[in-house]
Image (cartoon, rainbow, N blue to C red):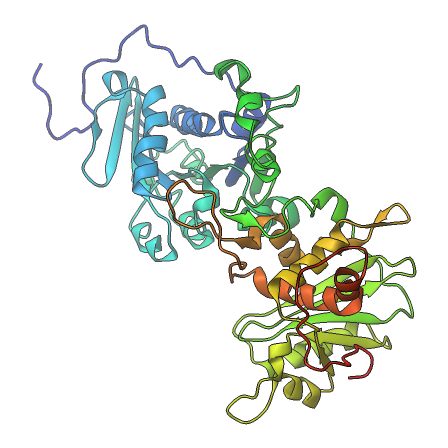
Length: 490
């Protein structure tokens, strides 16, 4: 029989013995059973998320009500963040389950498209690489039944939002049989997503854990090392135990346990001295009445402040961070002043900042002068030497007081500080042969400013004396503006 060139779905009959031998895990079974408009599943690597989403596309193709000519037509876009990842990971997974020999030849010319024709199903799958907000325009001309965002932690929220307006546009209304209600055409439409766990400041975290939009649902798979681990029978023996060996705690938490977390290149400034389960309170810290506030401040174009208290036992309690971007010192001072008046009324305030804040600007004003004009007196920290500053923080992280850590942060109100401790505040790795070498000063990034403020307040309120005159022997030179410097007589 001659092939009809006007019908892209026409092909040789499917192999009659072919079967999709797929059995959903408990989490993915719930995922398949839901009709939510947007559905997302996160979990460890190797847990079967991507396969589940690929099969969901076919499941929905089978469930679509036939058009007036008897064909069940659906069209999907499958989105990955880069072209290479799309080719080597996403398309490979798709073809593992829907091989061209059975389901039809894939067109490799952009946009890469697989037209599946089997039984009464006509399914069109378009594969796209989108990773920037500017790529939204690539979606604007699409009319699809659904979109699958593969590894959604790398997809910008603007792209996902744009996608919600492009689904449900296929098959066309004119193909609907009269007996099918208007609100059931297409039978289902929407967005599905999978991902390894992103950071806890990612849009996925906010939607899944903080404020879930109406019509959205999220699932999290169990740890790969738990008795409930999913997809184990399709993985090599001892898979998770072996990939966890030699990895950092953060890497294991994300890729093996399926927890939210930050995976950073480079070397964390505080190494193993900071332990999130020890030094971070996820339930929040209460303000101690009548106890003064000690505040560490970093200046520059991205000024930041860390508000702390010291308990009667000597525990440093980091209560709240103020992190700004492209903000003048004057505006920053107003923000800090408003925060103190609103959340900490009546408490004595003692501020410590970068000693370089004493340098005058083109108007012969220093950062200290500008802060003072807003009613905030800032004393210079005793040193700006990075080794001394980090050693002061390490000193507090390694101490205990009355069985409690001597240093603790409020994880909810100090998210940037926390993420910095968990690897964001780092020494960048040098690009040299053999690797393993790092810069000697921390990288300037979104985490460094609040950590500078943290170092100034820690150094100014006890640890300076401890590391220069106490039991610890330090080879560091003291860098002080005046020989009789004191935090109390400035």
